[in-house]
Amino acid sequence: MVKEEKDVKEVKAPKSEQTRTLILETALRLFQERGYDKTTMRAIAQEAGVSVGNAYYYFSSKEHLVQGFYDRIAAEHEAAVQPVLAGDEDLAARIRGVLLCWLDVAEPYHRFAAQFFKNAADPESPLSPFSKDSVAARDAAISIHKRCLAGAGTKVDPELAELLPQLMWLNQMGLVLYWVYDRTDDAERSRRLVERTAPIVARAIVLSRFRALRPLVRQVHEVLEEFLPGVAGRAADRPNRRAEPTEPAEPTGGADRPS
Image 1 (spheres, rainbow, N blue to C red):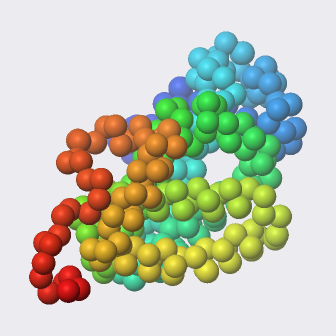
Image 2: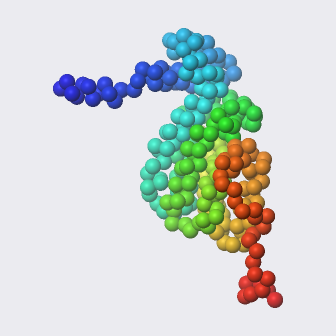
């Protein structure tokens, strides 16, 4: 009996983690009730029953509270998507499942999402999904797309294996933007968007393995690397590839070339 009580205590989260969770949950509730812009760190601390200094110890700003929200969404999505990743090998079904799981996880926070999106849309803001502050949540999301692709029964060109999950994540960001402003019940229009686009994305991935389309995929990614800071940052961490301004040279003669 004593051992069982000890095990329960060991499972219980440390007090510091409980306090951090309390502050985050209080902030999310106040963001919903009062709006992001009208909620102060002092109000959050007061509602949570902690000192302002304690609140700042765990979260240095309101923006970092939202980062905590991003991390929570990422963790909840990771848990919710496991049956999808372990299930059907059909790529369209997997993409559909991954995105619908995200909508399910995010739905409780839909009311206040638009309130801080104007801040997140600023590429200089730490709330931006492309910012350095968002790297953990961004990498977690890309990891899900990587496993979504790897577990499918679809052959992928090895040269594009690292690029495609990032492009799939950018597709998810487009869905998030639509969802933020979707006012239909249970985000019905966003769900319909997923149903319609998942087969298209899957088909595009299938086609990308054909030699004639590989340069196009690379060119699209290079444009994104140049103009989206977050993606460019990830590219900088990868080993340098051989310069490929175009598709690797093909023979000047042969059966594949028209005479």
